[in-house]
Each structure stands twice: as structure tokens, then as C-alpha cells.
Image (cartoon, rainbow, N blue to C red; front, side):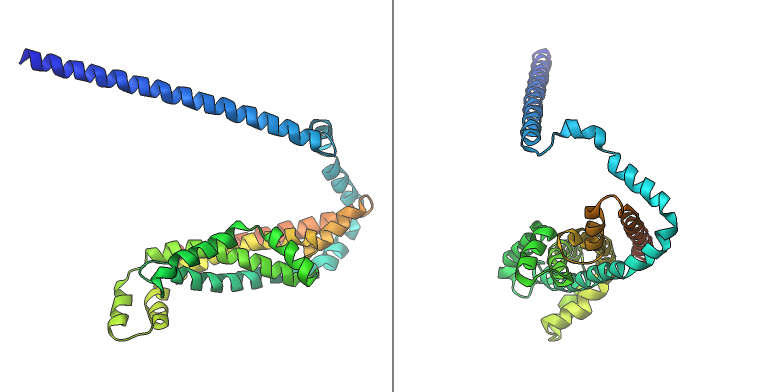
Length: 288
């Protein structure tokens, strides 16, 4: 019995020593990886700074010059603020329209692709990987890259921005919708299938009532993101308030009051949309 206890104690000592050795190796590997990461980060920063038109460190003290000049000029021309707000309001409406239409089209496309790429619901199960890779590609391509290509083909305007944002929305929402679909109860679908319902009828009557609140919640969240994206795409010639902001900033001193008015319109719009969509998302998901 004593020999057995000694054997157990020896094995416990060996296990403890092996665990401590493994922990030391992990710490050593983590330290080496951290040092390599810091070295690569420093070398990459130095390379980027050398190739930049102006040095980052040299330009760092000038970081607050632009906002200071913008705010100072906007304060000096404060009486012109209401007129500028009215002047650029149509461009803001165009930006919101781009975001709304692209969100609607993207959500419809995402619903179709998500149902076709969900196990247990797919119309063609063997094509599930194909539909999933399609959503991956749409989600991986940034809106600005798609917009630049479409502007080269179609010319400047809101249409390229709308298509670019809609394509990215299909990929982003399709991923979220497919995760919601996987949690749906399949019993209504099986019941409809047993009475001869078509695939569309099974999805419309058996799945959509379960997932519609989450669909709408994610779509509202995406609408907030698309408002920001449509404003950013205006800088590359896609229209909307972003295009007006690019013109106002490019003129420099003397037009900063217009840029300040555009910033205020954009900030207020994003805040209002965020509050409204958050309110309705909470009502849909949490019931209040």
C-alpha cells in the first residue's frame, strides 16, 4: 500500500513538472512572437513613414490645425449656418435614399441567399457551399472598391454607390440571416412538406414568421452602417452629401463654414437614425 502511495505521489510530481515545463515553453513562445510582432510593426511603420509624402511624426503637431480652422471659421460665419443647412439638406436626403434603397435590395438578396445556404432549409443542399462562397466574396469586397469600378463603368452618381452598398449588404446580412435560420424550428417546415407545400411556401409560412423580427433588427442595424458608407462613397464621386463635403473641404479656407454645416447635418442624421433604429430593434427583440 505504501509503495502504491509513493507511486501515485511520483506520478503527480511528474505531471506537475511536465505542466510547469509546458507552461514555460508557452510563455517563451508567446514572448518570442510578441517580440517579432513589435519588430514587424516598427519596421512597417518606418517603411510607411519613409514612403509617405510627409513624415508622420513631423506632421503630428499639425493634427489639430484643420479642426481648429474649421471651427473658428464656422464661428465667424455663424449667421450663414441656417442657409448652409438648407442648402445641403437635399444632398443629405440623397444620401439617406441611397442607404435606404441599398439596404432594402441587399436585405432581399440576403434573405434568398441565406435560405439557400442553410442546412435543413436549402432548396439545393449540394449548392450550399456555392451560395456561402458567394456571400463571402460580397462581404470581403469593400464598398469603395466596388463603387470605384462601377463609377469607371457607369459614371459618377448615386447608382454606383447604391449597387456597391447593396452588394456588400447582401454578403453581410446573408451571413447574419443564415445564423438566424439555423436556430429556426424545423417542425413547421416538416409539417408543410408533409402536406405537399412547395419550397417557397415552406419558407414563407414555416420559417419567415420565426425569423422576421431578427431579420428586421439586423436590417435596421445595417441601415445605420449604410448611411455612413453612402456618405463616405460621396468622396469618390458617388453623389450625396459626401460629394458636397469633398468640394467644400477641397476649396479650403473660405468654405469651411459649409463643411461645418455638412458635418453637423451628417452627425445629427446619424444620431437620429441610430436612436430610432435602436428603439425599434429593442421593441422587436426584447419586447419593449
